[in-house]
Length: 89
Image 1 (tube, rainbow, N blue to C red):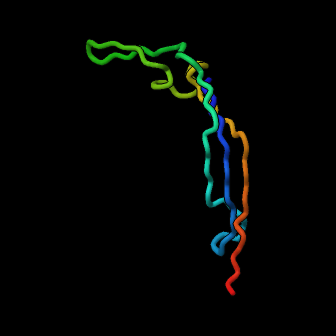
Image 2: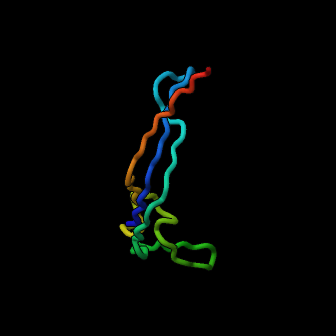
Image 3: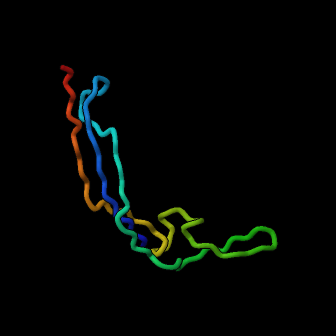
């Protein structure tokens, strides 16, 4: 399993179109990557006379990928800031 560790920072505000607080700016920062290793279930593909093997993550949907090819994204920290309303003088 390849694990991606990310920090999330979101800024929320309210506006006339949607008076409930909602995020309008979300930023994700990649903190660390823990590689899963080599594919343990390569897939054989054929095109005419040519045959080759590719890692299963390039061919199979996520639920059929081997443990080394699966990807997990873990949110390390989530920071939420509220945009203060500016008052015109």
